Amino acid sequence: MTEPVVTADKIDLTFQTADGPVHALKGVNLTINQGDFVSFIGPSGCGKTTFLRTIAALETPTGGTMTVNGMSADEARRARAYGYVFQAPGLYPWRTISGNISLPLEIMGFSKSDRKQRVDRVMDLVELSGFGGKFPWQLSGGMQQRASIARSLAFDADILLMDEPFGALDEIVRDRLNEALLELWRKTRKTIGFVTHSIPEAVYLSTRIVVMSPRPGRITRIIESTLPDERPLDIRDTPEFIALAHEVREGLREGHSYD
Image (tube, rainbow, N blue to C red; front, side, top):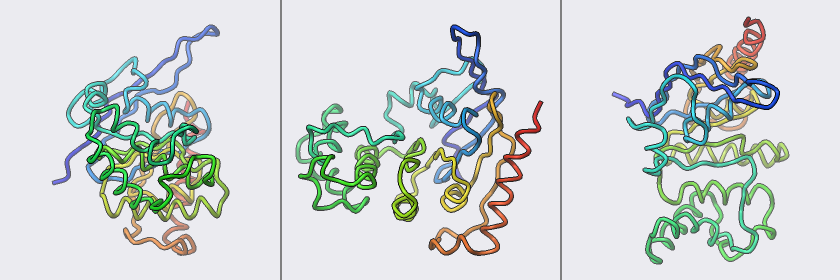
């Protein structure tokens, strides 16, 4: 039986600002199981990133309960239960690619030999072998983002949280990285939470698609993918893919009808 990895129970989150309270999330209930690839999609400002950040204990809910691996989100953060990939690669320009990927391992106190073994392994996973001695400014945007993913994988957390990591890339590079990420998921079976604005990206990558309403963010629909794990890019032209994309669009329209 598949184990739940993330359980959100009636999550509310309200930010207090100088202009008054901002209600970011309201009554969000969700279970993410081990090995799921769950995409979050919705209009800008709907709370997708905020919800991902509550899983990572980067934001604290004002109501409800969040558990990650059976612990509180903060305990899971301190136990290094997840890797987090931000929208921008966030690589240090004065460190080589290997040095950037190795940084969290250095902070955690891994030995030099263990760091090298782990860095080599994840660079191979994201197809960056041979580029370890380069600096970030010597690589393309897509390669920098792959290095960022490798860094989040280096300490081998079971959960990978990704906040719209390919949003700034052109369509050709984005397609290549979508293929690479799907292959990475098939190889590792890590549990992935992925924020996106792209319906085709959400449908192509996910085992489940979580559709969210405009603020305050609520889940309007959870769509189970019927696509096989093996997904060439041309699967996007199939009737099954088009039907799933249509269901996501319907969920987004439904979200705008919420009171």
